[in-house]
Length: 73
Image 1 (tube, rainbow, N blue to C red):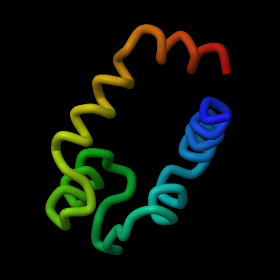
Image 2 (image 1 turned 120 degrees about the vertical axis):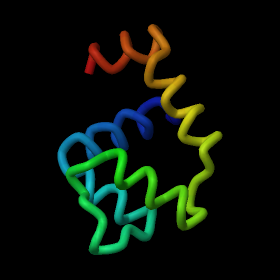
Image 3 (image 1 turned 180 degrees about the vertical axis):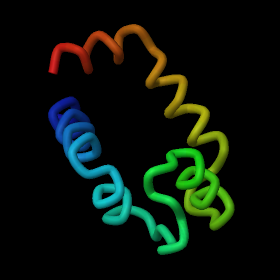
Image 4 (image 1 turned 90 degrees about the horizontal axis):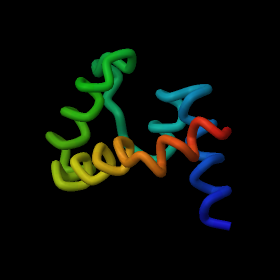
């Protein structure tokens, strides 16, 4: 069940990154939503996420098993 939720979130994010992020996080209007680094920096600066959370997400993204699963979708 959790795997389907993750894939659903991934698909939603790929279709509309700013919309998906805005449903979970408060992103200021002056943040360039086309710049992932600007979004991440804003989230860290406003204490919505920690650098550790970002690092963990990046590590998961680079995990060969996760990459294989995402290619299969």
